[in-house]
Image (cartoon, rainbow over all chains, first blue to last red; front, side, top):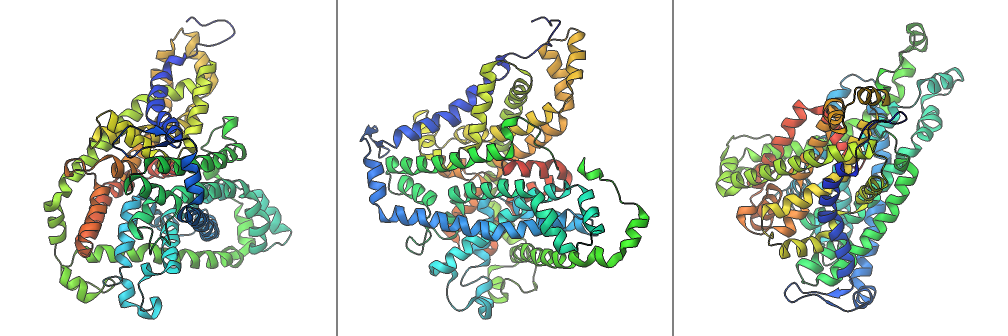
Length: 295
Length: 291
């Protein structure tokens, strides 16, 4: 490889090969296999055998599956509705110049550092019906068990996810809010626009792309998260918080019905892929630009 | 760049006065105080609980100021195997970071500099990888690892964890490498440098910030990983700390001080990194969201 007059020395494919092989083996191969297994019956003991579309048919006749899809959508939508306004407010605030801001933001980001397991275990303990806060604050939580009713159990799940992930979205909005050109605010001030109008007419429109990115992250995350459900509610009471991802886990590792579980997995991948294709389009990853803007 | 924003002239700031400057900040500041409370309260309850005996905790309730102080919960956790889980998690983390650091920089270099069509296709595949939720592939992962004889083996956890950290790392690092000006490459090539010399003497030194970001990101993924250990390990010898927490909760859920002490133990290393490498960590956290 000698440099030519027109070009410079470029690395060959060999530089990418080790990573490509590794990624292919441990991420793409399982992805292919999940598609294959979705058309097979496998109990984990005997070899898998093909059953055509059986799994798909079983799933669409399964009331628990249909309910789990509805619950996934509900939890995701509630998550977006709670986290988006909250993180926009916090992000815009954190982008400013207040005193103590750095210290406070440092505290705000702590939930994001913790594993989903730690967060869920922590909240399960704090909200424990016998030893937790509800037992000592019945004026706020009532006498019942928060995990004993569908409404409050869903409330807990939405709250805990918001507690854990709002900092991430706050970071995204903070970066975006900092990148808003100062001139726009100065112009608005000269025109006599107050802070509230500035927020709605300058800040929000300028955050449009971040709203898209962050919403899609919430949707993909919301559709696939199940560790929170596993630790906080085990899908209960009954199947009242059994979202699709958790149902998949149950099918596979509790009922040893790996085929049907794979089918649910494929469904999840399909949904997530469609959504992230939209991300790639809207956020401009495919234009191969620097992604560190605004940081 | 946005950080070094142009400051408005002093006269203009004085003209506007303090009132208009701080008015909305009251609202947002109030909201942020509520958030501070929401974040701080459970963390406070957690810390306080870990320093009390079970009986004291049950009597005092989660929010009371502690009247006694004991380290028993932490000592008991170590007796119950958390020392071993800690070592297992550390081993997984080191190996995952090692794999990522070995494989991703050359990959990103090729993505940024190569003109070959294959490399371009590989980049597309990694972008696709951003979209694969790890949850969706746990069944075939279980199948592959069982067939490979790696079930209930930490290697079986390390390999997929590293693979699933790679797309984001490649995206972050190639973003940083793309910011290296073409003139520098040309200058080095003029001097007759090979791809390999360009990589080691130009690209690597100039992408140090990106390297620390991907190290922190992959370490965080490995340390906090729950899904792969959940389905790929079983015995106490291969238990990582998140699994330790989960099992602790299902088996001795009523020992809340002991449980929360274990949660605190699982957080300590990350909080230490947060103290000393905040910038890299925050950028790594942005990576958690796929950004």
